[in-house]
Length: 290
Image: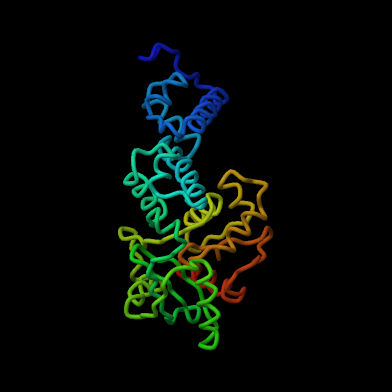
């Protein structure tokens, strides 16, 4: 018996799955109440420590992170429907706009207001820089890198810029290579790749797109996976096409390594910034890891 007076979960994996399933359903049904860990654990009859370990092992994230993901998704829909930040805070069960602000900054690197305005009021500095793969366009906000693309020569600068600007249509864009230069050096100079000082990126997309992009970050340089592998990694094994579309919409190429995804059988598949560039990046990374 545990301290709540219920029998602890059996060790069989099928029983563990049922407990985690019940916990997920409980969190979804009570997300607006922001239930604490103790309450969720009590619902499935486990002590909090035991439940936390079980949930993380099965779901790949903590109960708190799962609840925050649901809350963030709900908040995005409310903001998209023109609710104010304060209204959204209360409608998602948060105690105030401060908690909503912290949630957005933690997971999106944007404030709720910045998200709702689709970039309006945001200053986006951009610059074109030489890279091992041609002319690179880097978009930078005060919170991190928001965009990275490529241009095949100076005559395609405007085309590349317009492509990136469509992702943040209401932002203010200022060309200043003195500001974007240090970030470009961090991205393309391997001597500046430091695990202790990771690059800060700003990603805005649907929950599905974010899950795909976060999974891309787990692929090491020199390694490649298939679209099927990537779909399986986010527990969507049949969603090959949807995963491929999300990969194609990745706004921060190279840093979020969509180039490391191949077709089944080893074909290159697609790449927004041209297949020759994708092949060059893959080859360059393989040389680094030899």
